[in-house]
Length: 179
Length: 398
Image (cartoon, rainbow over all chains, first blue to last red; front, top):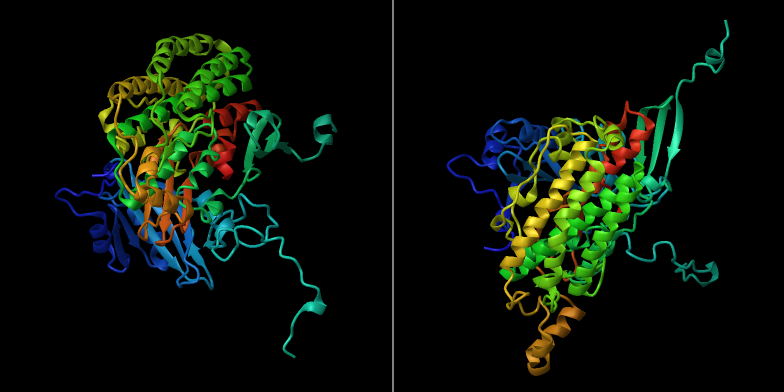
């Protein structure tokens, strides 16, 4: 038992787990289930994300009413490159669940969850700002922490931590060409 | 017939730019207010003036180096930030922390909660025109900072909580120092209440101002005192106990009025509850015992060991040069910060540097609800509403 063990409230006593509820609702909604350190992650196909999230919130046996966090991680150079992660909490049953969507680097677009949780608004704006992922039907998709004219998406792995603006420009005469 | 009113035309509203240097925004927050006379029609917060890219910087640091960065996010709750980050790394490593270190962590974090609420109360009162409360609050906060200095050698950016435990043994005389604080603090909290709770001006400025329903608060992902004032007993210390909080007896104060006054009352009640927890933690902390877990290669060895054992010296060198590599995986840990649910999501790819560190900062997400709180209210109420959300811009922008 570690210090964190109480946070893993996924122990199910005599009733179906949320994963099985989702499977029973739509077997395609659960592409993969990852259990790690007592946390449950459900990988959802991108096209089913909004329906699955709404189901997680509205189903009487799940009731994940609080979207506590949403973020993204970049597995560059592997494909599918982006993983958008949503952390859900069911306050009444003390349960946590993570939904994950894998997106390719070529055209990272996903349905917005603002129609399901209005609180997703700023969370998704932050992901858009720092990772450049587009959210369909988001009411106000613009940068939130960076200036509006910022170039690039800083939290992508191919964006350097330092020295992005200060690469010295080589004078043309010194550029080695093969021609 | 032309009157002065019709002569100005149909433009009924004006846009007022509040901030980013407005003193009541507690930092650099800009809010665009569309006003109809003195009534706010629309409010659009604009943040990012304090963005420092802490999450990006974490990707280029080893796991133990990034602790100092977490101090600087929410500068009124550095110990809480240390705690959530260290707990996330410990979860990735599956590392157990000795009980004594857990109690020390609880005690420090609860002291931090009192000091954060004191800063909040003082600045919020000064925003609404009650000058003297500020001076009293900062007097007591100073005593807490002195305790932190005793423990960590630093007043604010303590970095006291480390991966696997805490940095140092409690210093000589710590019991007396905290005892003295616990003796006078309850009467000081009463003192603040005499100044404010039944004060007619205070009630007029805060009662029925900035109402939000419990459903809206949950839908907008609000947490902390704001959601508890709306009647939802959502407190991570009770719901998902961490760091042995399940062994402590305390109440989670809730109210149903959900206005600025209710949020003020919740925070005052929370200060009293935190004093109870600190008292209990002091009783649980034994005079000797381990403050770090035994994990060679992850937790730096004791100084004495390094002078006598070669392995200890090698581990010390390896920890501070290449760091350690947790197995690939993800962990999300939440704690209850003074402002709400503070979360840390870490993804490891098996290398000594994290693949991604994300902080679920309560200030940022609670700030999102500001338009909901202020629209339809008077412009002077905007200041009361920003105050009771209790934002720290360092954490909003990270």
